[in-house]
Image (tube, rainbow, N blue to C red; front, side, top):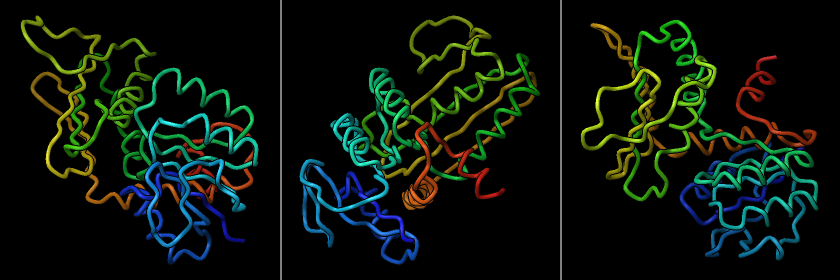
Length: 254
């Protein structure tokens, strides 16, 4: 049976990518969209979830932190899962998400790309093997319209590396002025913004006389839309809880 999806942020670029892919998907369909700035896109689009009357299974959210509680409350009231693909959430927003995950199924990840999630596994292994002998620096590059920095993916990668050090590393966002010698407890994170860069992430392990670099480059936003639709299919009829890409991959490869 087809998974019925509400696309939040339907009139944005990512919403457009999701809708484009769903046009030829035999296992999932978009029943309507929600967007702060509705326009004609071929399906009903509402400004608020209070206007939605269509039956659905999952919300794919590529909007923004604005209105987060409204869409989570709608999902709770109607028994929908939520693929939370937006970024830029505050600590309080994330606490709200955790609370709702006790009552609905939420798929949350900073990056829906399969390649980035493979990158996570690679850098965790590298950090465990290389240890304190190597300094870790993360460089992320995005288009000039991106509002948050560093990217959610960069922070996710930093957290992954930090797991190898039991959370003992501190994050330094860029450097300026006379900052002194680099401390071993640092993970440097640097944000680059320019042009139409979709998303590039580089994790550098710099040791004595050698450097190991693991990179991922997204060449199209469609890769994230593909991941979101996969997540929506995975989430249908799942019990309440917090899910991420590792759960999806484990189920697909079982």
